[in-house]
Amino acid sequence: MKVYMKRIFILTLAFLSSVLSLNAESVVLTTQSGTSDTLIFSLFLAAIIFMAIIIYALGKAIVQISKNKKLWENIWNKSAVVVLFILANLFSANAYAQDAATNQPLIRLSDGDIYFLSLIVLTMFGIVLILFIALNRLLKGLKQEDTAAALAAKEHKPSVIEVWSQKLTDVVPIEQEEDLLFDHEYDGIRELDNNLPPWWKWMFYISIVFAVVYMLHYHVFKTGDLSIAEYHKEMRVAEANVMAYLKDKALNVDEFSVVTVDTESKLANGKKVWTKNCVVCHGAEGQGGTGPNMTDEYWVHGGDIKDLFKTIKYGVPEKGMQVWNGVLTPVEMQNVASYILTFQGTNPEGQKEKEGELYVPKVEEAEADTSVVE
Image 1 (tube, rainbow, N blue to C red):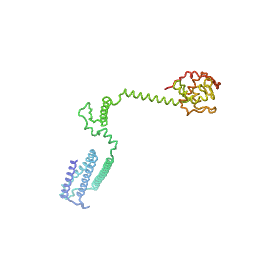
Image 2: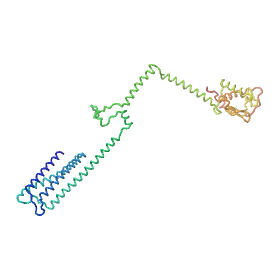
Image 3: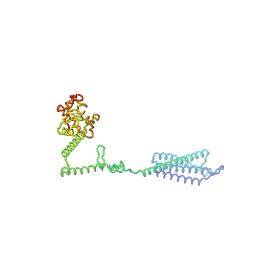
């Protein structure tokens, strides 16, 4: 571009020197207007060259800002046409200068010539205005982009997550990956020499420390239980939990879950309850008294273990038997009900008359398991 500027500058100087020498040798005034046609033409030519220089300067500025070389080449080609036009007129002016001695005007301009030159000047002036407006808008757009970029850079602050992500991953930006490439290459593929992520390295270090502590704790100093010892310990805890569960379940006996017990300890507990609370009404051997006989097969309220448990639990207030729920525990009621069934078929002396209905146990009830879980 500097070369183009020098060319236009040299052409401008050449034009001005030619115009000055031409005016010095042949200044002829016309009788009609009193103004030299040569001077008018020189002014038009100077205006055209001046416009061409301005167009060139504006075009160069736009090209430098937009970085569009093709646009600059188009501007230069258009400017070259104008320069060629100027040179053509300049040579014709020198040809007219040879007739200066004959006292004839060097250049004669018709109305058409003046109109044509005026049109060229106005056209170039319009081009100057268009280029100036384009340059102004381009500068404003660049200013707005720079302002927006500056504000974005100023407003954008990395968040806590972004900061910690960078610290944990040690990621290298893509634009800096060229510095990490290895020199070797395989089938057009090159490797990056990235660092291992810090989080991965710290986990590896922690695992090493854990392994050392584990070995010392379990195998060197033996302060911790190995797998077999932990197994036996957990089995003992599980057995204790099972016993506690069964004990709690045994205390939660009701008329739906009660079963006949036959262990000596349970029956002894039932006999103790019977002697303390039931002998007064039913006799020591279950022969009956105020209450019904417990030794025969006839029952007023049912002869099944569940029926007995229910009768003991809720009582028969209308016949004088109290409610034992809350006085006896569920286990005690189960034990005494099982003890009452041991009176069946004993046939003691002084037994009371038969009452109620004959009770015949069902087959499944007779074969039911009467054991109790300790």
